[in-house]
Amino acid sequence: MSTKFELKNLASGKISQLDALSGTLGPDALDISQLTKDQGVFTFDPGFMATASTESKITFIDGDAGVLLYRGYPVEQLADKSSYLEVANLLIEGQLPTKLKLSAFQNSIMHHTMVNEQLLRFFQGFHHNAHPMAMVSAVVASMAAFYHDTTDINDPRHREIFSHRIIAKLPTIAAAAYKHSLGQPFVYPRNDLRYCANMLNMFFAVPCEPYAIDPVAAEALDLLFILHADHEQNASTSTVRLAGSTGANPYAAISAGVSALWGPAHGGANEAVLDMLLGIGSVENIDKFLARVKAKDSNVRLMGFGHRVYKNFDPRAKIIRSMCYRVLDKLGKSDNPLFELSLRLEEVALKDEYFVSRKLYPNVDFYSGIIYSALGIPRSMFTVMFAIARTAGWVAHWLEMVSDPNMKISRPRQLYTGPKKLDYLPIEKR
Ligand code: CMC
Image 1 (cartoon, helix red, strand yellow):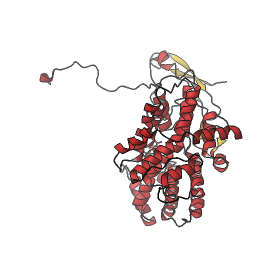
Image 2: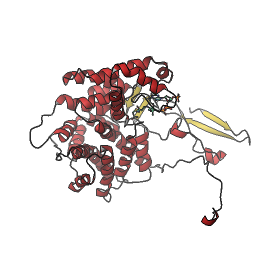
Image 3: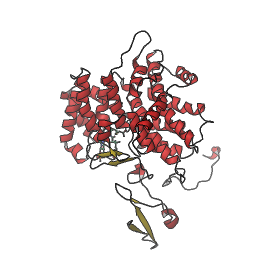
Image 4: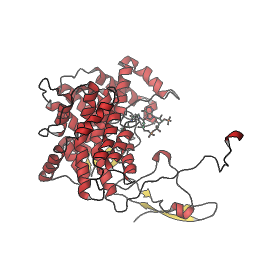
């Protein structure tokens, strides 16, 4: 039975009854959808600190316990036993695929990897040092121009083709952005390779010599992608939902998600962590750096620390930290000064009253850059890697939203604090 709440306007005495909606896990959510009609007021919650923007069956986070479930499966189990494409299929379809279904999905993804040649020419318009996130966001938005008339979001088959295409082509677009920044020729996708192995090949192969794909690198990438695949209503996913709620072309909605992910408070943190570690330089400078972080109004943050939802260890950070030992060891790079520095930084911060009292723990971005760097992926591409992985989640959320017959345009209201009605003053009288 749902709990009822009463809200009383102390001035008029008017009482509204509000239902608390129960999900399968997590706190109840007060249904305030009739509140404005009833009481003539809006709710006010900048930053969505206490607002559930939607109902969803995809991902669950318990931030106090450090739990993350994709469609009910703990991320630790998926990281241990699954693959990125299986997880993508799970997120999209809602259940673990059979062998036959997984193989059909993998086959479809690996046969949508090529992009239209005209799309590749877009890269010529960018300067060689354009940030890859800017290029990826622009080129993904441009996909809408190629598939606009053929994408009917009310047709389930069209939705499926869109979802396979975008997951398949994101690595190709990312690799093209990387090759453009290097001035190297673009490497076409190879459909005989697995998803991450193909990506490494497109990133690092050159026409003048053979390139051997390191299975350790491909496996590490696949694992990182599983951990980044979805994270319920984070800023970029909410952006995809908001843009998509207007009925916009889904490629344009995904591009909006890429742009939202870029910020350092979100996916851009992985690049910022490496910048920070290089800036700190060595363990002797940790105390000095943390003093700057803690100084009032310093605007310096310990990047890769803190999370809106996790007030305990981010389970993804734990997995990536132990993965660092394994991957660096297997790649013969166990003597990694940046990893040593980040371990020590974490240790010092976790004992510091400033971080303890605010419940700030390492998040997914604290250690991921160490692995990307060890794989030879440059810093400017870190957030692009996050975008490729998160595409599965964006697609799953977009599909969940547009398949809902009750989908509504997302249109928040505001607390207006601007001037009251003014009369226009002709310019000569101002
Ligand atoms: N370093 C120093 N202080 C911090 C940090 C940090 N990384 N994170 C939060 N705080 C402090 C903040 O100054 C505030 O202190 P006070 O109460 O004295 O004003 C308090 O902790 C609460 O912070 P907040 O900014 O109100 O918390 P939020 O939930 O709005 O922000 C966050 C969450 C992730 C944006 C923030 O923790 C942050 O900026 N972290 C660094 C950037 C980062 O690593 N982002 C990646 C997030 S995980 C991956 C993803 O989402 O893509």
